[in-house]
Length: 201
Image 1 (cartoon, rainbow, N blue to C red):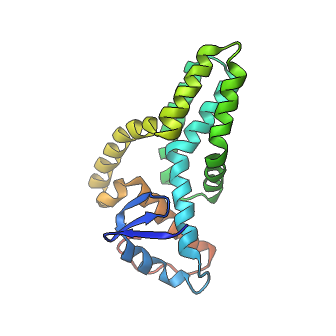
Image 2 (image 1 turned 90 degrees about the vertical axis):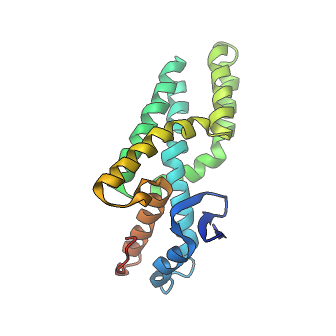
């Protein structure tokens, strides 16, 4: 995943904005890792991108789909989506980064549309209401990510309040920044490189 710089702000090649950190800061932060792996910056961006995607969308979407198949009543699937979304924030803070969840998110990117379409076709003959809900879910959440956008508003407000009280700085209220920061730290451990002194870390 290539690095994109837009007026000094760091973006992934697919357009995800990592607020709270400037491109130059990211380059300086990952400079010591280049000797061990020349492509480490691209790997970090890709892993962080898919990790935060799992927290905000892929994880809840996967659980929604699984619940539809196991417990047909559609309200249980919508509740599962909401609960997984909330659980995602508790995963992010204590567990920091996760290459496994990033890989799951990357796979779901390709599997999401066909899986939900197949689900719609299977349920259409006997559970038409459920099938229609799945189609609406695919459009509003799968394509537009409206569910994630709405649900993340109170979460981001709470994290902003927490960051202010804890003195960590407003950047710690930015979920994309946290995913990137934790992924950078994990790569320092993977490559056995000593963490540099940095106000960001």
